[in-house]
Length: 428
Image 1: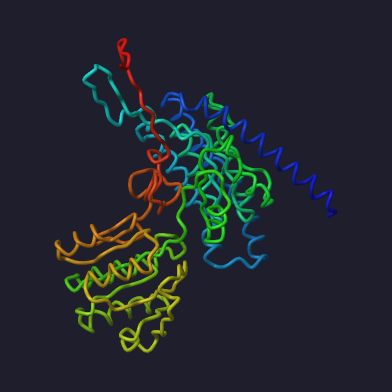
Image 2: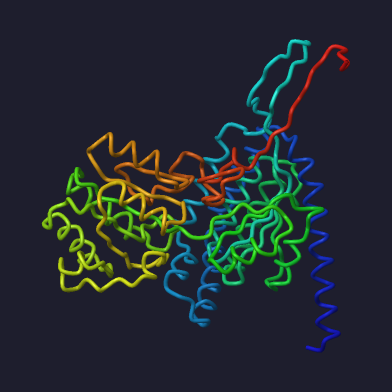
């Protein structure tokens, strides 16, 4: 392609993104004031469409998978990309669940009166237009679009090239739901090209986009955080830990460790490091480590872990800060709950961390002192999911400290305004 052709192509993408942004802004103005009954109709119809069109979705997904395998996509990424009837039903069920949630728009968050008679209320309102940039997971198309719709926001979705065919069929169902309910279809738009220049345009669209949500690997998130002129709501990695305390029930600890790592290794809530209290007996430590090995998990351990089983590989310094997203876990011995929290502070990503113990005092100390967005007691880190929290679904798990933190659902996709009612007051 000549330099002139490339320049013309860049101009075409810029114009296309400008059109998407303008349409989204108009749709957001309508959706922000739509009654909840109308939004529910849209979501229920979209869910029905997903069920009706599941064969088309699977056919599109096969196209995506064939291209991904030809491009030598990694096994964890292929697992994220893959759809089947069960996963499509889960998407549809999530839309129905989101429809049933209370409307987050218009909630009165607080209200008070001033001595001069002014009545002041803090009220929840939509953010406006949300740009979501994501990789490989086509279910994000359904989850993100539905959550934005329910919270009164317009969405511009830019999925990865690897999931383009699947995502476009899913988005078609969401738009059908909007049309069925009499809402503007442009409240949910898919960027129709996979050119990375479209991402660059989104990151500068301060006139049209109010917030950007990236979901993907570190390179994507780092680029968005580095280049975006639009505020960003993101998490970088999910370095999740399970700490087994000296007072843990051995059977429970073993079950949680296996589930937290092996249920689905490719999700951000999968445990990447297992921390074992030095006060645990060797028999308990060996049982947990061997159970992971027997499940097909590679274990990389520190010097005190290596002797527990000949299959344990020595951990490197980088292992403690690695998000494997695969059947690999690093294991370290720590000196009690303080040692566990210190390890998490040094190596964690403030995503999700869990303690297994029967000691309530120790558990409450861990839950209070751990810096993570999600802290758990006697539960698998795989529950770090908006659907499991009763939110219907999530756009992602935010590790930000401003605005939303943890699972980002409909309430987290609102901001606030102040409504002041007077009866003629003037300020002296």
